[in-house]
Image 1 (tube, helix red, strand yellow):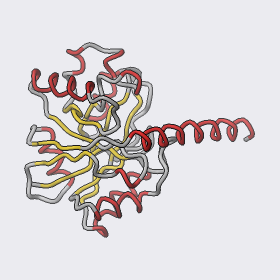
Image 2 (image 1 turned 180 degrees about the vertical axis):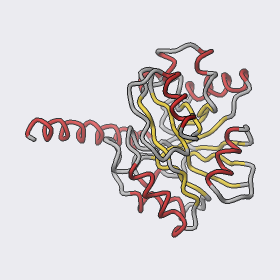
Image 3 (image 1 turned 120 degrees about the vertical axis):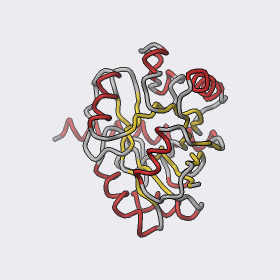
Image 4 (image 1 turned 90 degrees about the vertical axis):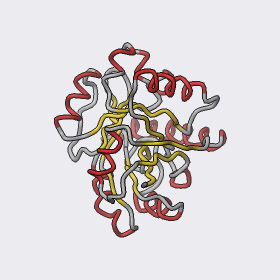
Length: 228
């Protein structure tokens, strides 16, 4: 049984703060076996993290968080950029074409680009897995709805800290039923539903700080683009 973090952001995300080395250090410190850096619509930092992971005695899982036309989708196991803005179905197809696993994070939280604001539950059920525990939720209601949906549809389940600072890596962990320390084995276990999850809620003040930091970085980025 391996314990992995499948949803974390580096400084390459518009709302992330830390370099991948700090995320890897944190994952090692809290005793994880693997880490997926899933930046928003970016892949390069995740590829770097996957290459560096063995130096931290970790399995590195490349991936990204894709902004589809419907909302966010985690593309785990991909090594090429999945374009943003595609339909939900096209996004899943592109992830699969690249050999990846499509996991839908926080699907019932529409305020954070959850896809169910724009697709049906039948469409959601086409994903490979559902993130049923996301640490960055205020009440937990959306997590409970996600879990009920996944169980009702017989879908594989994952957890993710959705960390935007290194200290929050490992807040939510997916335990995968495999002893093989490889990204391929971990993702096969996820795809087959050989997972259990556990997690702790991100403290409210940290969620607020992360959100505020994201707004500031987006504003700075817009100004820089105007000046270029």
